[in-house]
Image (cartoon, rainbow, N blue to C red):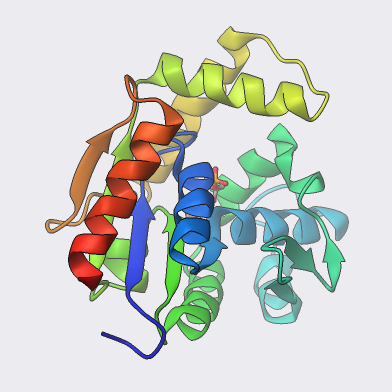
Length: 222
Ligand code: DC
């Protein structure tokens, strides 16, 4: 075991419930939660503020060196010190994040930050490549899946709670497009680690999925 506890890696496709599950599991274990998707989104927001609209923009490399991304004590994502949790929910930022996340220069920077924050354990990280690339030696790896319709419905409810209403068909299309890009990209594609526990959350309530992950974690920590 590491200094502060285990590393719990939760990977899975877009809107599979990773972040909400990871946040609640971290709370119940008194662990830190690192939402790595929020880091890629915060970087996309930063890049968009510099006028970047595509991964081909030569400015991206320089910006990945400059961007200062962090979390506050409440787990909110900070970009240059300001809380951008709401701004990064915009679908356009999610798309740009998925595109910029295909670039090794961006991934290297994010992965190094994640390894630094998580190395002492006592942490739940959620993302796409936590169990395969960021912490291949994580003590517990979970791979969350859910069918596309369930995921689109969850994303619609999440956006609606922030005051954005989008049709289900548009969200399903967006989710399928991101799934494709995340799984087909050359560098660190979304992939289940061979030693990950797969959990299909399509038919589970939130409480059930949280309990399953907490119980698995308790088995590891003893
Ligand atoms: O989990 P999310 O939808 O907030 O992530 C936004 C994008 O960031 C996603 O489309 C792919 C990318 N991402 C990644 O490549 N690696 C991670 N560990 C987390 C997210």
